[in-house]
Image (cartoon, rainbow, N blue to C red):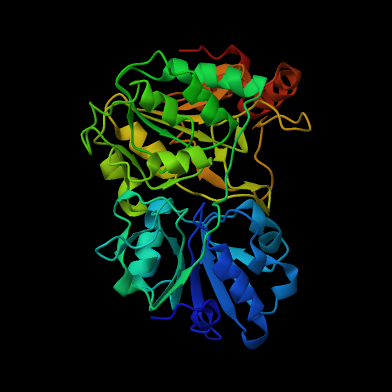
Amino acid sequence: MITNVREAVALISPGNRVFIQGGPATPHFLLQALADQAARLWDIELVSISLQGNAVVADKRYKDTFRMNSLFVSENIRAAVNEGRGDYVPIFLSEIPLLFRNNILPLDVALVHVSPPDKHGYCSLGTSVDIALSAVKHANIIIAQVNPRMPRTHGDGIIHKSNFQAMVDVCEELPEVVTTATEIAGRIAGHCANLVDDGATLQIGIGAIPDAVLSCLSSHKALGVHTEMFSDGLIPLIERGVVTNEHKQKHRGKTVASFVLGSRKLYDFIDDNPAVALLGIDYVNDTSVIRTNPKVTAINSAIEVDITGQVCSDSIGTYHYSGVGGQMDFIRGAALSTGGKPIIALPSTTSKNESKIVSFLKKGAGVVTTRAHAHYIVTEYGVAYLYGKNMRQRAKALIEIAHPNHREALEKDAFERFHSYAFERSY
């Protein structure tokens, strides 16, 4: 078993496709060692979802050695992708494991970040089971960064040390993400919280709006959680008995997620916690699994929404900003759940006071949630319910939750597009 970091990274050869575990489990010690060996390497393809912290291998210095082929464009590789030093693969999170399993993206090497082995020799993938589980199963060589600061999580991410060709010890803190709610986020959250029924099963992401939503749910009862991502905002709801998971059909009594991202408090909360199960993304985000739970309420964000209900979530025009992620997995799963509510929540304007409710999406914008899948759109000005509405009715409902400064222009565009729009009855 290789334990020296230089010897471990030396297992990577020119032309390899290398998987990098993401989220708080981004293996920075291994990535720095890989960058240090850039001079002997070329044509290295790096595959990942959202990396956290400084992604040294995406630096311009290494453009002739490493090329990101990202399955989700995180902030630290955004420049590389948009400057042509990297690529972006649009794909549902639930289907990424198929890329590895079916040799569409066969993996030569996987770099992972795990907890120390227990007395039986088993390590945990910790905070990020998601697609890492599939990568570990299908990569030819697995190099593990072993860190006592990585929480040991229950669920699918238990890997015996015999699966690793190299194990490198390191003790370093995990990247943390802490959000601060704004007044606008609070108003949006209030509207979203009003849509959450007692006994609902939640899917909710990270950011100011999701955390604000969670803070508005303290008076709710018997909520469940089946979500791709677990953030700090869930902790008080679990501790106060608001989240009980008692009505879920899948994993009753357990909070289910595929990865976590937040503060050290969150990482300590999930450590050896049998009430939390981190499972593979192909299961957690499987629409057929999601829909079995009652009243699935999925709250996701967007960059802009046009007046017919098309939702752009992964780009600003042609500028790649994030990714398809799990939005459609849960939007569809919630729609098919008994009593489910798929929700897209966003501020009415950008930081430059441009409207996020638009007549037409920007040229090159990516439609992640189609107009046929959109049900609830929420801004700080209220809720637009689109399901079953025709194009003119949708436009009217969405203009009513746009920022007042932009409604007149939107109404003019809608009238020109739909003609008698202004006289259409609202049902």
